Length: 413
Image (cartoon, rainbow, N blue to C red):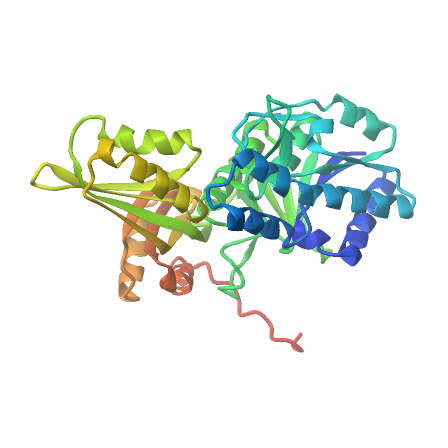
């Protein structure tokens, strides 16, 4: 007998038939003798609609009221799944974030989990009941509902798995594992049997949609074994594990991309101590995450400062920087939402030279201009015009030898 946390994303619970399918999967695990807790997202498209309504009313809306609105999607799903489970003879009960409770800080819209009380969930599972927990949400210090950021249901699932000391956290989604890149762009992408926490963290942080970044961080910290698998096919998934479990470490494991980036350039900023702090401290205080940063020093005592933020954060970032214009002293601010970040990731980079050179040469041969570059020990990322996203991903996937066999066409064996 094992203790398992099963998490189902929005496409897995998109309608009543899919919710019944999820209930059937949960019942099979219960009948196998396992203790099971379930975490679910809102039905596919619901959160996007709720977010859109908030943005249409006010681009600079109150984040506390935003959380009140968008947290309702998961509340619907947990109730429906609990009913579906009860209908097929499985003892189940829905749980909102505050009922667990999942305690968070007060960074509304992208709150961080402070603590989870797992004792009550463990007691219910030992009694044979299946807790169905709302992902993506918690409760802040002021007892107001908070949300954990996009993809936050993954974080909820891993955090609950750690809190209840689960043997495994199964993340069910619309893909059957972690691939070397997006199979919709590169049909010859290969599924990885295992991938290290560190590689998965880098891939998630630079745009891979399989797992949310913070969920991988927590899994790595708490050593929660995570399996990514499909809600719609009974196939083996991909395991996210310690690096020591991977016998043969490839130089490059995957190519990721993100279209959710926006580039901000501050022209002719005075080059003096403290100027970077005057730019980035206010953005940090407003929970605007800054990613890639490059600074070009001019001969006249000024500098051009370029950085990226999430595309959804661009209006807030521009508003903050306009208010700080006098303190910063920049001549002009340019914003470009039509960019994409392309990243090459692999733990083998630590011991192999030439990975970045291959990337730059490949993009150059395709006529793709690189706007910004950033690197880490196992990752190289570049910013390019959004129109070149798919071309860049395909070219790099081939350049690093990641292409698998040509997939069979419909009707072929």
